[in-house]
Image (cartoon, helix red, strand yellow):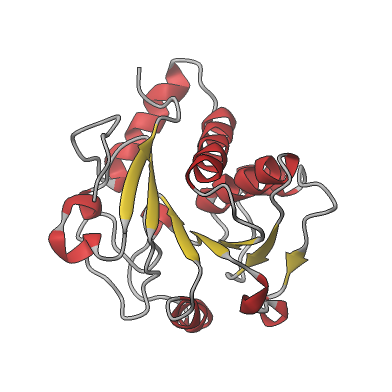
Length: 211
């Protein structure tokens, strides 16, 4: 199910990067767009699911992870705790690192082997976003395989990891979101019948990228 959208047309990953560049030219920083994305996602999940208790932000190394880090910070400010785990052995993007450094000390940064899935009633996928191509790293695929089988809320930021944003091609252990927050605009995979089964209910969040 797709809820009423900020943008009815779809934007490919390349088109979204171009839209971000145009937004920057208008005076909106990439940092502000990330802040908008994380805040919007945090407020939306608190509105939709007010009884949540404890979450896990599953992060990659790019700016999708930064969106989740902002989300974790805002949720913490409103009394909804979450832990963070980084799944890729890569340096964080500058914006993600900046937001990692803003996290309160109450938010735990875990190694993958420290994660106990039973501790959480919701999971946020922020490993790849629109940037996924090829195959899921083995450690990510194994974690998603387990999460997809348990009873918990599964939320994807922008596009479920394992799902190609532009083609809708999905890997076997693609994150099976029950809720997907499309950031700024729908992506092609959000409207492809073979791909929407991985997205669940889709809500498009206005993050200030378009005039």
